[in-house]
Image (cartoon, rainbow, N blue to C red; front, side, top):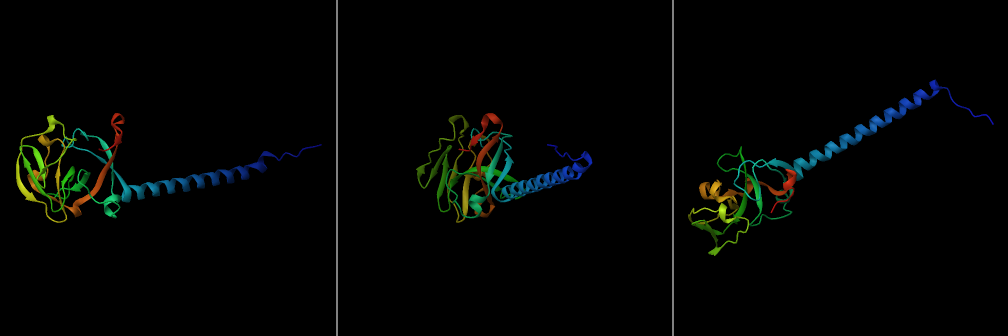
Length: 190
């Protein structure tokens, strides 16, 4: 039985069509991937670089982290004491800071020789090692409605609410959730 094999010239248009379909499919997949990445970065997670030592040892200088912008924006979760948040610095909203929430709206906060008191009780702060504490004191103050008292974990090198006051809720735009660089520090932010 004889088998019919088309001449090479007859195959060429078929190959061109399959290459064109593959290129269109690849471009479509790339476009969808970029679109999904843009949506995630704009609305859900944003990569940021930690600059400074005020959040050591939890976060170190030049570390890369993801912040969750969705969790607070749409009321999925309320801001809680102990959250590590990213916010626009009240003294210059063109700058972002990262600190830990210590005082909630309505709380009475006082720092006595480095020990934080909230509503008259010593705040348990296992995230602040002894070597990172300082002897600073602040007077008793009530956190205003819709504002938060924030502190860095490395108290002796932190510029925080002890210096410039509380942070309005509208300035808080994300929660630190995950360290992705350097590789030896990869993990959930505590």
